[in-house]
Image: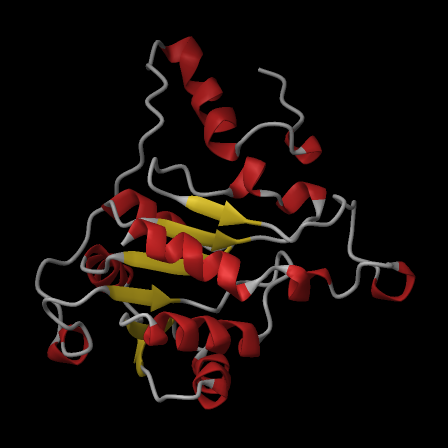
Length: 210
């Protein structure tokens, strides 16, 4: 099977499913993942029963452009003003980023650092919505059935048409600028385009899903 994934014309999930067709495996476009049912108290304590709980995961591996810390903080503030219980989430090694977002928030938000993938999946499962850039935990949200809201850059190979969450309740947002081939800060009239992705747009997308 010949594929040209670098062109970004199809979603990675569909490309992978195509590889199964010769084996007679039907292309079921639904993901799933195992998760911990029993979470440690330091994780469950941040989730407020009877409230709308939203996790914001600002970290990523650096394979694409991301929002600045202050934008995630503004999102947390806006959701908080709408009565949402916001929890800032990170993986190990991302404590400094989590602190940067927390410091920029007008109100102190709960923070959790989760090192176990099964605990992370179990934690996301208990949320009403999960916000993240183009990163694995965003797809974990889809896999456990929690609405995912993704933040993506306009670089062609990074677009949500290739890497976005695939759940029916999911959404992905990209700055309203022309698609580019690579980020060139010194030569780009749209730089920094990620600042052009409105916090309210993302917040509205979250509110629609909770």
